[in-house]
Length: 419
Image 1 (cartoon, rainbow, N blue to C red):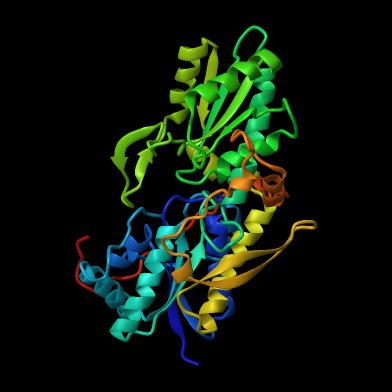
Image 2: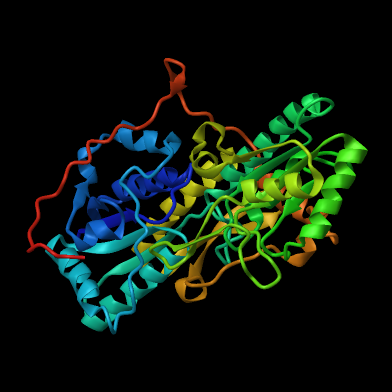
């Protein structure tokens, strides 16, 4: 059977385990060296393909590739760059095919979230129209856990573990100081439209009175009066109040509490600052002393606290992506299927990208407590297995040891292309 090359790229916000998926893809490609020649990585995602800025992964040793499994960030560079529709931006798509032709790339692995699934689907459609044999497979990743079909998204479990742990630890700090100092602590977490990460903070407490006392989800319209009433009750009843709030918290009319007025390259509203906004309300309405924190990049970069199950799943979807491609399945995504809650068991199945692209999975209403301020037992049953296990990276001189790549560039064969 003829040997052809593969292209791998990372897209969107990175995670603590996206490089574990890269490791899965690359190691699988090396095992099938009779069918896959070289693996080229796009420098800064799909932009690397458009500008023919390719990294020759064959220059990296087996040990370096294995070290990707415990290295956070995006080893080859990621990007927020969404390809527009084929009709009005055909030149971009034709350029991608030209680059792939020039480097004999027949396998396209795109590691990202919903927008990346859309790009992958468009590439498979275009290659068919242009008569170029390209197999496009989407490798799932997103801390937001909002991809459809898959039970959970690689990257989410580790964020959930970090947020649950941080909520627990910060709550102990506040509890020890509340008699004479801080009464309210607000932790802002990621989650533009879906409250999965905020929900994971609720794993820190088990029952009434245990923090977090309030979780604020994007799925539940924000009611200032109701929230302040709840804060006051908690401070009077327990001495303090811990709040976990999603960056996507919004009012009844859909307006975000913390809308900067800007949009990113994908057209999403730029968010951030809901914690100080909410803390300001507490000060204004109730006069309590407060502290707030924004987990921001820390939550998605905390590989030192990665959930073992998340690492294993991230690697597995990368590995499965290669197997699907070699099996001739096109425009697909390896999806995680939960087969049992107790004991937790999972497997991977193929999901068509037509059912993944441009769709989001939100928190089901029965996962959110009736009062809208916490999670139900059903949600806890879903979330708990995803944060299980530890997979600590090796440490050197007191710090995590990470992969150091050569990132050797491939010689360009085509004229320059302007984005």
